[in-house]
Length: 363
Length: 128
Image (cartoon, rainbow over all chains, first blue to last red; front, side, top):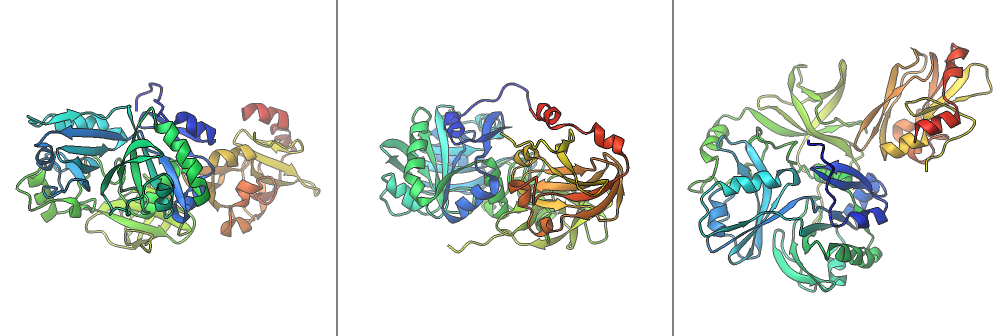
């Protein structure tokens, strides 16, 4: 991490008004919590939460060939993607390691909207730029756009109060619409396991929209939520986080994301390497649960049933929903449960393997 | 602003110590400043009663959603009892760090060490 002073999003002052506690994250000064991580976590599960995720990158690729260009590089087969639809995908190196995980949307007939992880936005853009892209205009992520995530079961009522009267779209759909008379693009996705959307809005209008949303959302229990709750919410769903379960060395097959790979596609970047890895997996991501409130933490060694080191915890936290510690770990493919995490030399925390997601929601 | 109580002594690790009515008996906890920095406390690992400890020794840990912090023995002596109620519900550490959130009671060996602990004023400067 470089030591230059962190950037602020357009919503910084709104966060200050709500009493946010800030942390440096991917070069930005971001709110980690307002009232408390557990409180914000529960707000999203029970009513709704509003997150500033403007540190992420929103990039546009434009031109009649934009869809084919993206499809020829990413792992997912999006050749059949309709206008106003999106899909989760990986972007891989030639050797199969993961450049980033991202969501690509066909936001218009001849336009692709891509949402990159904050720490990868420059890397991703450069990666795409290196491929021949004649006739496709590549527009990098810019501070002129902000991204606000509305998440939780009360999201439909809140969007309605702001003037969105359409039928609730399916997951990964896109809508261009005005909210509180501010022009926005709604991406019906999220990172919490709850229904909701991510809202692309011009940064000069972002504070006005945020404040209007907080106002109209109040009666539905809407709360501002920080990155702390965002992390516990995503971990309860078992979602991968780049830099933890995925990185330049960890490939999507071993990360358990084979479902997002279009094996039948003629080609995509890293296909040959991933096909080989698929036949000879060395590692796997497993979901682990502690029997107590004590949580395994990122970086702790994971031991197998014989007491041999077999990998490490990639993400670990207390789960507000389950009341116990939960974790994802990257371990040897041949290892098996019961696992344990080394809290410190000589002290182990027993872990039970379970399925992802840790929490199943009634839809 | 974090609360600092006049009648307590403090350590630079953001723990407080209180002299009880019985001689050499001291109660220990984490400060309001500490609980506020940690955020929601989710788990407390406490030492066993009866254990002898040295000043500065790690005797347990406090976990919040995001982080784990060690608990240090503020003084040399013997652990007399621990706050077992925190095993099931550690929330008093956030809501009442000087009351229901106490961690241990101990019998101290050395009055000199007690005198070296920070006063409320000195701790206030340290916690700024």
